Image (cartoon, rainbow, N blue to C red; front, side, top):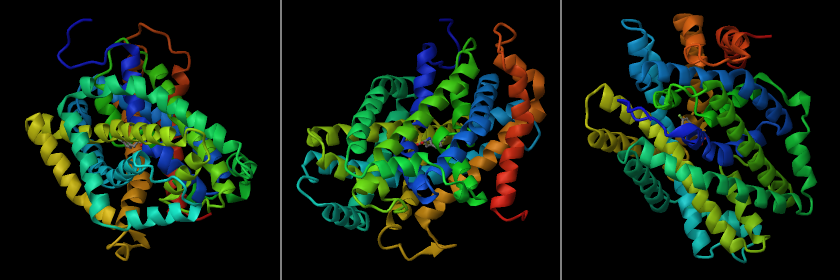
Length: 451
Ligand code: PFF
């Protein structure tokens, strides 16, 4: 390998593993089922899948292009590629989004640590579905325990970010991600063989077209953006580490397919069990935490599988939180000239302070609401459904219209050295289809335009 100034991912699999590490996380296993459950199941899945390919893949590709071209973090990339123009606002929005996402994401990541602890101490064993729910409710509405777990998780994230991108991420993602997939498949098999499971499969795969509304479209767009880690520049930073001879179109497609397959698998694991155990699919934030222990109870080797599952889920969450914190740290280091250590400590601790309020939304602050949402709900909704899609819109506009066709062609063909068969279509999607699709969803779902 030619020595380069910036760290690059070693080999083809390094970048796929790292980008997939960012994409695959609680978004797939916790958020996808709860949002799909609240938005009609099959109808939601259909819209979600369309958005992954029409909007998600092109935006991911755009982020890779921008990052690899600029060789900088999100904020720096816009400053470098568009000097004296306000496009760096996209970078700033991304940093705000990173703060808010990490704040609420670590609440749920903390829950996975508590569940790992419960799995280890055999805490699910012999409990009825109602008892499992009661234990969960009493844990999450407390203050001390969920906050401690959240802070532990934030500390882990910060520790790994301090160790640097390559060492920190690549190593773990490569081995553990396939193991997580295998485990989800095993649990899905158990779930679909439960009595009454068929109803769950029907819920997930049989779209009721009358359920497709602009609100569902916005939720699907938000979920697609959140799950793929697009719209806030996280993948711009990753793009800056991708080798110059990597075929970006293949990488973006592989990462998106991997991420989406894992979300669907999570659906197959969760929904049959939802119906088998008479749980309400519109349960909300707690859905998977209520369902999962029930599945383990019904599995041979449930004790072992539950421990392994929550370890792997925590690691999957960790590879995502690392990528979010990395956005903040890269900005602090490269733009504000902090040392990596100071940047990580300042970033992680300030986010942790905000994060505590998200965790308390399930307990002492549950009555503190705005637009009918708790602090947690507001952070979750606003980042996924507004900030990320809006960031995604600006990113495709920046690449498609400001940098233009030549830059796209150059980067996608690696300076004309490789052939990309669908190049023309991709340019068209980046310039027209993706921005129009995102704008329409915004305009209609937010009631700016009425049919
Ligand atoms: N994609 C991650 C998940 O699905 O869990 C969450 C995420 C990571 C969102 C990084 C945004 C991001 F920049």
